Length: 155
Image: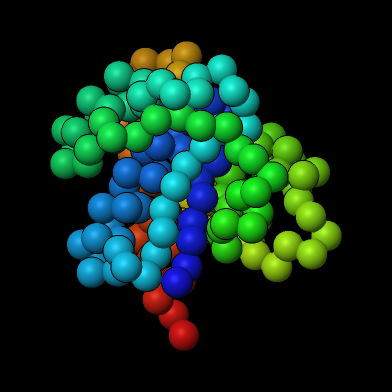
């Protein structure tokens, strides 16, 4: 069984979007029993809150349901629980790398490393922008999620 954790700053925009989209792709591929999916934030500002209403609405318009998700903060135990810890941007990646135990054998990387032709290296934070930012995040996340699923399926 593989396990994937998506990480952003507050766990209300980017990482829950990735969580919801990747979970839906895993389920559509019939792999829900083989791939565990979760998301979190490096900060604790929104712990227990649902995803941002704008992220939820944009995802819903594309057929993805983020409503069951609740924000949580990254914990050191996540290194024991997840094989693949994927950050949305370099700042969060640096935070994860600083916490990474020397014996962690999993992957800590940028999520867009799995995008087949990334137009950018980081998933931009749409929190302070307009509605178009959430659409851009969805475009990036859908493509990177497909790439991640292909990578996990590869022998």
